[in-house]
Length: 160
Image (tube, rainbow, N blue to C red; front, side, top):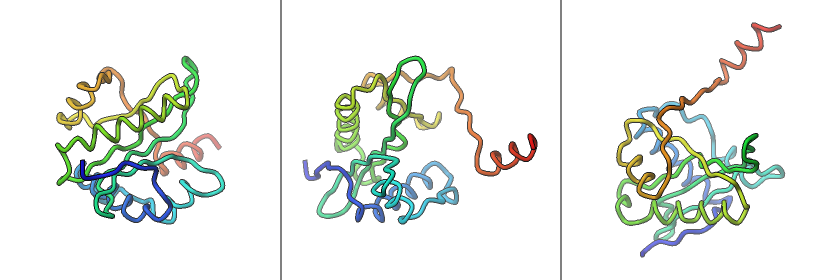
């Protein structure tokens, strides 16, 4: 193993943002990333910490990350959401994804959460296979529902 997994630091966020952009490009959404390094630094390390991030570091370069945040299930209680687990293209197949997922699961267990949940894009069969091999249940009968920023504004203007 030529990498280490550790909790991210404020100064890692520039490289974390590069990984986020790499994922967006892979998912054919290269122009969708709006978050900045400053946003990540404030939201992850500011007064009101909104997420926890693990990074994989190889020779001072961040080559993978997993970002989680707390949620609450009305059926189960405390849960965490894995927003993204990203491994650089050159590090895929090295066990790095498993190492990052291991840290997320240990973290969730430490927090005594009842569930760890995340989404995977339906055409990313390698990721789906990876998650299934780890015992995750891919719920194909559920649809993700979102209101984006414009949708929120439109919704509010329609009810005013």
